[in-house]
Length: 392
Image (cartoon, rainbow, N blue to C red; front, side):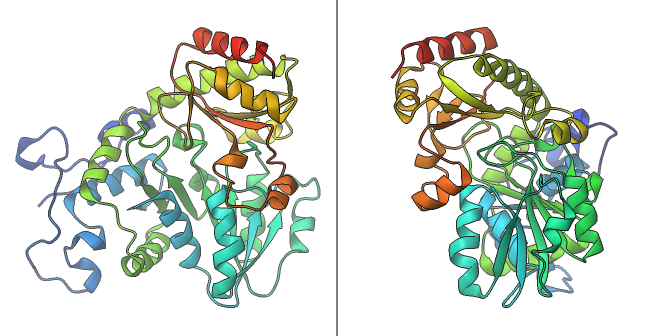
């Protein structure tokens, strides 16, 4: 009987080998793509056990789930059709009509739009909290209601790169019986494994760093067997299942995760230091900079500061001119691939929010987000320098 349980001592080895089918199927070194919608019946005792593609239990899924669980130090994992499928299904698995969520004040635009527009139609309310508030839990307690059930967090926020006191958030949630869900997309398991500090569920847009090659859309949910089971049960009904070929590509991409993210950490750190000294830029958001408001939290929590940064140009005109002058980065949405990408969040990830909402969060037209790739750092910095030097 094929098993998918193998784990190893280090992340470096787990990203390559964890969860691979044993014995190897027909001797294949790489997990094959099982492009079959259905499978022969056996002695299934429950509906979830029926082998069917929508139920996320093909061999392609099982191998991927085992690897995702291993690299995030979880008991179980679930791959989904997109990062938003992972996020929304994880939230809805634990809250319903009349319930209330505490949400970090700056979130990915899709998550924010879901909380602002869709959750209220389902009778779900939320209150934004500042995880870096010096008062910490004292300020969060003011937002609690008798129906608060869940905290929604991001390790490194999108697009302002904020890092809050996540350990305090875990302790607060446990004290008040809340489920914690954290989006670990920007940090990746290379830099941080939230389950190890007591977070209940980790979600990823696996489209980004986990895959790393900008060629699929996928999501991931990792946690305890019990928590992931609840998410999976709801996903079966909502239908956000990932297809086998995407499973294959994501499993392949994971094999180089440590190598890619290590280089991206280094490149982003150097680029952030360079940008911090430029007169065309009024502020750089990167938790690896000692001047960054979240640096102390990031230094204590993270083993690396990530490949994402953002900066405010002196004007929206300078920002727009910069985007037109850079030669190596691509002006495109999304992130986490091997190529450097630049974009204005006000025109991409947060375009769905109102101008007033973006302004309130600090997502203005002069803000540029950079997903740093694996290119030569000296060449990348030189390109940024010539693009900035041109002015508005």
